[in-house]
Amino acid sequence: MPNINGTTGNDSIDVSNDSGTLNGAPQGSPINDIRARGGNDVVTVSNRMS
Image 1 (cartoon, rainbow, N blue to C red):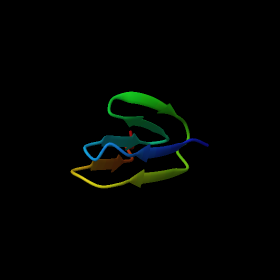
Image 2: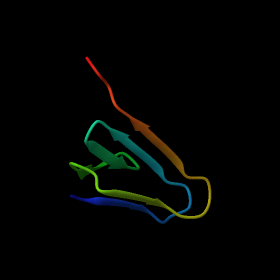
Image 3: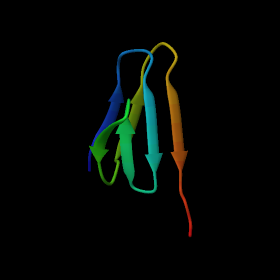
Image 4: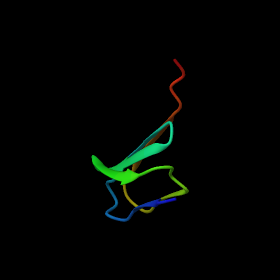
């Protein structure tokens, strides 16, 4: 289970269902932990049910 670690201060982190991206780059699945440090991070977590 990968972790997402945002460290640049202006990170965009998105987790939808079990998959995550950091600044648009896939981080794997399922996401275990999210860390956003400093600056203007944007973290979006969504669970899309069909």
